[in-house]
Image (cartoon, rainbow, N blue to C red; front, side, top):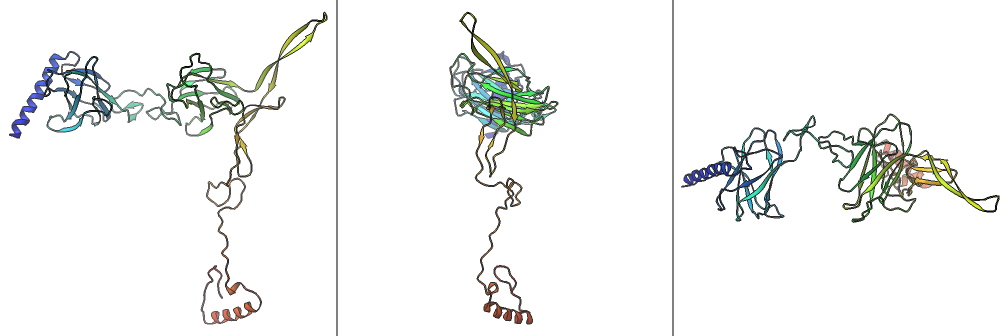
Length: 411
């Protein structure tokens, strides 16, 4: 009886596939789908037992997502069953995805194998969309080994700016004087900076440029890494000098001939647009307006531009002996910090990264074991020591060696 039912089911599936290939104009005549495709499929009739069968023969191995989505104007509740090339072994099954009645299945496919996606609907709808998407987990020479699509080299790694295929993502080039309008739609923006001279540059954000204030103001942050993408050189989040808790102003000494990656992101998930700026920071200027009395007794306001040189101050690490500060731009003539100089509070404890029991900052011995106090007579003086020496004489004579609890030999 079971053999008869199996033969009947196989026959129904084969006939259903043939019906789809004839009736469904959206599907190829061989009922085949590829990775990256989305198709609208149709049942032969609105009957519970009716199946639509799609052939899936991946060229590469890897993880794919097979999902359904109700076609426009239809409310479906499809079920997916994945069979082997003989359609005699059920490999996987998916029903509701946890959010709605569409199915979602993560399936690990193998190159050269043939799979059949058998789908049916438990509702009245006779059509829905089916998608097969690649996870792009494995790459070789910039090509996905599952779907063989080239990597788009978009940054996904939040620390080193690597694209999905593992190559360091150089990003868009940015130069002195550039201003770039950004939004929170992209998790991370990476820019490549090749300074034309060794000098201090100032990287700033401005969240007040957007005319439409629909969401929360942007809360940008910035990180600078070296050309390998492995070493974080400096990080900045908020401006302290201007009492601005959202924007950043980061001065840094860039060297000519080196390549740097500047990564920026927004701490707010939904925010307005904001502007990233990069400029040379050797001088700063401001206008001074004076009132000058003319010969006829009238006065005229005269405005002149004053320019001062800036001094770059490197970052000073806070230690167990002193406070520290971030990188800074200082004007000696104004006696004022123009950017950076964020305060780092003095550390409460010593630091011993190399674990040699010596503080890396102050060279003080730390974690040293305190000497054990011992009341043994071997440490006494006077008459007690006289009799103790006699005892030790006989111990040595008869080779009765012993050691005190504090480690001192009793002979």
